[in-house]
Length: 209
Length: 209
Image 1 (tube, rainbow over the protein chains, first blue to last red):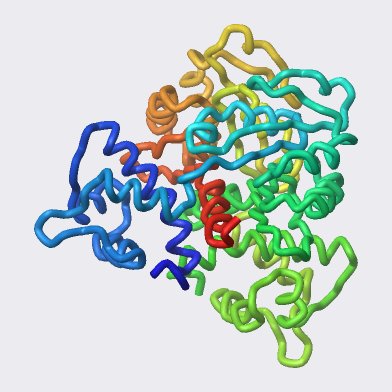
Image 2 (tube, chains in turn cyan, orange):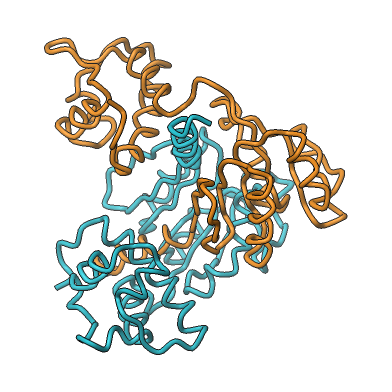
């Protein structure tokens, strides 16, 4: 039932997951697609359609059981286990990601931070010591890493990616402003922060601001 | 001709813009939708369809003039002027954004950084001094700000947003892990970094990793 789900639906699931967590924190037990629509900002029919992709968890006249739905979406998102992660590049962005408390709560466990700058090596960030990137291949061989966050500059990113691919790291979250070229079946999410700004400038222009 | 363009198309434009910039840097003068498709990863028909939204810039048998297309997309994205920006929250993430060289190159000019921590006030980041957030409303009154980047923690973000709305800042780029509630016509882009991670865990689960 979970096959052939469009990327658009998958990209919406984390948002459902976040909002359902908030409802749970407020001790809300059940919710209709209409109520969910009002807080999450998707239409009620969109919500019903999205959740039908996964078999549908709602009952006519009752709505959705918040906890069940939260757990089911968590399962779909793969949140029933932990993931080992490393950060490459211990600059401001790398440090910011290392300090994001919520990643750990979701099960994304930070086990290593690497940098090429000798001044950064040995520094402790959120309980994890920064290691020299020269020893990274060795570390990756000993530790099965699920996801690597690339926080290097543009020029260093591809080389780092090559090492990660060779070590069979399973996924890359890339913040360097370059679309990485990897021809293995490693999964890559490229984050281009500038794209968000260009969306904003588009809307400011459209509004005539 | 630019009306009623879907959000999906708009979200793809920055990627076209980035790749065209790279082609220009390599001195490529013209390109077919097929060639563009190979480097950018959208289908050729998707590319033709996207660019037709803006009147279409291609010529049968010639392809696209790279420089013209780059300039046109830049115009559509509102990149014919500069935008004044401020950062609220001078922690690691705020500092990382302050140091992103490319934002300035695109015309997003950083004119202020604010923090509530007295230890941060007076610090200079990329040539901009950190000011006490207490004086922000005054600063915003004197300086017409286009875009504010919120890099505070979850609890402080809504209060900061309220000040920004009152001062008629035009757009907010929010990195705090909370969907802001603003009922004016201010444009908000919420960045939820955890959503990317959940997309990755979804794919790892699907692959049976």
